[in-house]
Amino acid sequence: CGHITMTRIYHVGFRCERCNRHGPFGWLYRCTEHRELILDDMNRRGFEVAFDKIGADFAEQMSLGKWGPDKRHDKYSVLREMTQEQMQSYTPDQIATLLAQRENVPPFRSFSGYSGRNLFDTMPDEDPTETPWVPVMQYECQYKACHHCYRRAAEKSWLSLDGIVNGDIPPTAAGAYSFHYMQQRPICDASVVSNLGYRAVPLV
Ligand SMILES: [Zn+2]
Ligand SMILES: [Zn+2]
Image 1 (cartoon, rainbow, N blue to C red):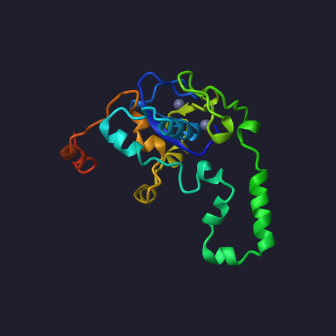
Image 2 (image 1 turned 90 degrees about the horizontal axis):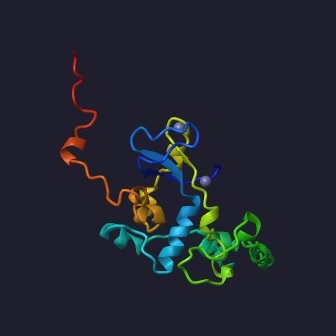
Image 3 (image 1 turned 45 degrees about the vertical axis):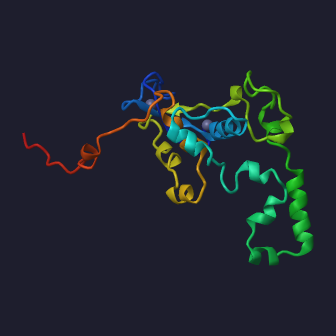
């Protein structure tokens, strides 16, 4: 789909959009580019975005990242993103130009087809200019593919553990979006998992 983030989604009913088969291990990769924004928005509005207590606890810490669209919506965020040295390398005129450029960036809804109204039927209308980065559900990219057909999906689904430790917890990770269709997390016996790949190969 051309987006840059995906996650595994566990559901036996979904089919790969390339080969039309079910995921061989019970999961497919699914695009999360828009879903991250939608989940963050739902959470911000007080809607439930997790199916269990662990998810609910992490939901309080979800974030679109240090340089997420919500942060960059504020034109002065450009100043916060700079180190002291970077700031000193600009002249006041250049800083003013940078700020003016940020001011002129149109909300991306206006050129990607998002109307910004009625994100969910049950949600009250909100001024669309307040959160122009949130797509409406009907335009959400839900591209799904199996790992045979779309090998690059593995790279797109990595999470940075360093980032998470430092507070950049993507909404899909915080609420365990991968498992929300199952409404439970797969729990494996730790003693079995710790042995995977270590058992001797049977000779017969
Ligand atoms: Zn496939
Ligand atoms: Zn996509």
